[in-house]
Length: 535
Image 1 (cartoon, rainbow, N blue to C red):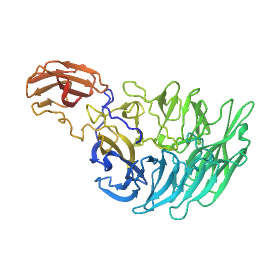
Image 2: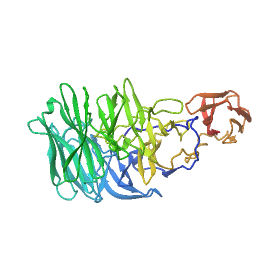
Image 3: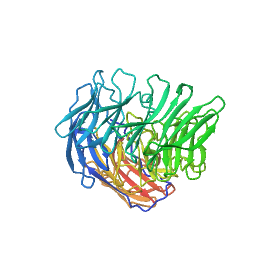
Image 4: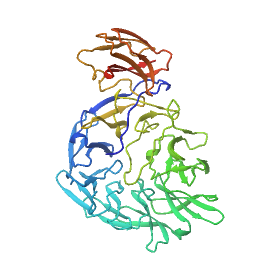
């Protein structure tokens, strides 16, 4: 299963906004004993029986009702499904999936419907990008044992067609393939048969055209795809020279006509693979050791992160919100930055307490998306660091915790109709689907678990809640073995009381506003927990 995340509490120094957000349990338990995950496609939500096979269902995003739409075949003991977020496709009543044989031998790409399963590719590399434009599915893969990547297209009705071979890809880190929905075409880079030239092409799934050819890539020629703006696809071509490096920013229209937008000259620096489009007028071009943000309106550029290693692994527009983008910068460790495309507007993305967030907003081609991020309200990212969840803005990140004493492992974030959906783990065999609406952190916990740890002989009431830091804990009995501890959202102990009376006045008014957790133990065993809000 993909990387899982952990919910934490609200950052205490984050300014409180109007609480308009709601969080609820959409589905109490997914089928298949915890093996199901959720995916989105074409603004609809689906449940996918990852790893084991079974029913693929469309999820009603209002009621949580499941409608069976396809069936993935059960897998053998050495097989796994290699379909991850971003690779999920549901077209013409079929879902496209890849089956990986961990023991070696045959791997498959299949299209599964309600009652039929069609083999698209057999004995091929399973970890492959699966993309779609309109009603055509594109698969970048290669036969097992081969070295050349091949690009295939299928309409899920007729036999699959190989469009090209030698597609530039070095194992997923920098594959050169990008969708252009405005043209209903896919752009990709190949090497010629003699391994001397780079060739940029585009295809609509049946025909293909050559956009540009660069001879002698061994001498330092190459392409980098950036993204689409309106009907045009933007890219760079570059040449490493003895005295200076030259990068041409170009665009290609729907007819295949290439126009030079501008030329960048610099010493010993040429583009890395990938790129982003910000605000439909800025191109974010990763160079080795920096990012160049090029403004199409003013034809000016600005350098960011000079001398640093930018983690660009197959960047996608998932990195971009309405007014800013995110970048992972590596030195000895990863640090996530948030930027509006200017040096002044580029800051470390961190919690209110100043902790940097190594959110790793990256997407490997074989996984497409690790499920650890989503941008809600066009401004607020959700990200993980050390299996924790953060919701924030350009200044800092806040935290939210569903379970006071254990992880909830939120994962598989999907945005549908402006709402955010994700899964949490209730236990090893129970996965809930959660729905978050709004841009703020909810103040109520939809799980209603505050009394889950209450014993038959012990009852407790905490009031008032919210409070100003002074509150009362009333218990049903006095016990020398009981103790009260209050923790802040960072897990730091702010109050410790070794004797619990039937009425206990607690004062944490000298601590910052925010969320705290009251825990009562008996001989070290937790018997009660409650979340409180100091405001």
